[in-house]
Amino acid sequence: MTQNASASPLHDLARQHLAADVAERWIGLLRPGVRLVAVTEPGPEDVVVGRLGGLPALPADVEWPVWEGHGPLSFVASVDCAALPAGDLDIALPDGGTLAFFYFDGQIDDGDALVEVGDPGSQAGARVIHIPAGVPVAERALPAVDDEDVEFEAYPEVPLTARVEWTAPDSWHPDVMTALSSGGAVKDGGGHPEEAGEFLDKLWDLDREADHLIGGHPNPVQNPVEYEIAHGLLGRDTDWHDPRVAEEARGWTLLAQIDTDHAADMMWGDTGALYWLIRPQDLAELRFDRAMFTWQCC
Image (tube, rainbow, N blue to C red; front, side):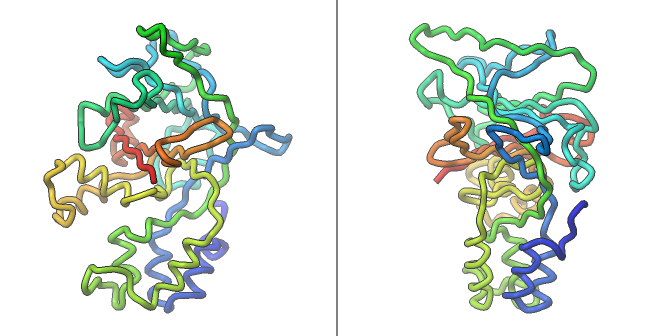
């Protein structure tokens, strides 16, 4: 990684406000991620690695993704894998090609149909398409929709640059609860230990930009995202404290997070975010059809 943990504000914060052993446990949970930074007017020094919105460039034999019975998905973002600093991450991104992200955003049905992790059939409302390097592509026009009264529009195009950062898991993630507890063991499960309060307050106060991420830890709006994926896969009736939820959650890693972004006219619910997660083995095998999607909002 081009930056080390000792240079991270997260590292400094933990060292300043936590006991040494607790700080080391928490620092051990940090993961490198690529923050995608929206720039409306890239300068000469800005390396553009992808974009929000606009129209996708697709191969001739790739159809625009459609959720059967509902309609076409909206093109959300794309990233150039070769341009990403993928070598600084702890996930095996493709060496080249493009990842394109699509989502059924409610334009067509005024938000009636929702893509929910607890409803397996609705996962067709979110797609990741990997376009291998060297495959000819062309910008694809918006597909027609059946209802002539519906105006299906593309999001404004916003270029993205990249920087590698250390990312922290959500403060309510069970691994964090364990790391912050005396002796590395949660005693009552009722909350964070009192001695970690100042650290968590300072962590919350860190200046955060829009969280467009590739890899690293997701930044949840509500529950830890990995646990939401795991709970949805195990079934809505599964107890959240069932050990199988934690076991399943550890098998998933963030592929991409696309936040609400006003420059691109993207608003996911009430200032929410979109999340695509994938199992590391599926990522290594380029099985993006096995990625899981969820979204959260305030």
